[in-house]
Length: 351
Image (cartoon, rainbow, N blue to C red; front, side, top):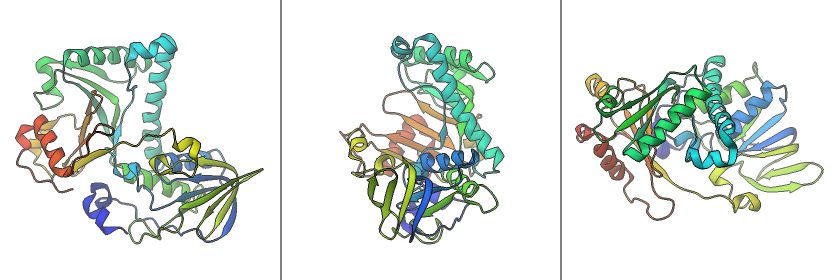
């Protein structure tokens, strides 16, 4: 267990699944080997197992959820993060509707998986997309139209002017698009609950080898992949073992490094930072948002936030890709938080 990371990290400090997995110390065979124990890796393993492909091995270099999966905002959102009219030039109106349906399907898969496997991930429905100015408000109007065309069954409503306060307790926004098809989760518990479903001996039987005896107990860096060899089959080697498989899936995200140069050279790492306040009073919670949903603005470099089960406000932001990295992440996010919610200027930051 990395007590330093868990002590500083809201998700690590509130995880509910003390899973135990061994490090890989043998030469084994598999139908599919997956490198990376985040959302992409674990959910692919679970999806394969649900389709009857159970001889799947997941290799994780550190502990499950070490990367962005276990330290993100927990936002469950749909839509596309691009200018709609620009994208329509390439895909057309029908293609745009399909893109919105696909994105909404992803949110639905999360909800269904939580229900099916009884995952304790604190899911709360409701998402708010926020506009600072009239140009962004016009974008929300376009999104509202596309959402209603793609998913008319969802509760979707655009609030403007003073009505914004019905959804979010801040004066800095001129509009908010409420979409009840989205929401938020405890992302680390979602991952660990999914891993438990895939790994359970009385469940789907996926083999998960991570470089730790347990997420909640000890961390051993014993299973980072050191070499991948291609041929009629693929051979993935770690320091103490190997996996021979018919198929390989890369699910490393920003930790790919030079294991696969052709993919790595096409990646760009950026940074996002978040803080979690102390538990807030019920009065403050109601003032922040009666919806209790997740929120993000639609600027290129966003703020995003949500209320947790413990009535904490988890507030995050991103820096521009390369220009600036804060030296004091907590101070940086506190400044941004109080710009949105001045009445929280005296709250304590716990994580």
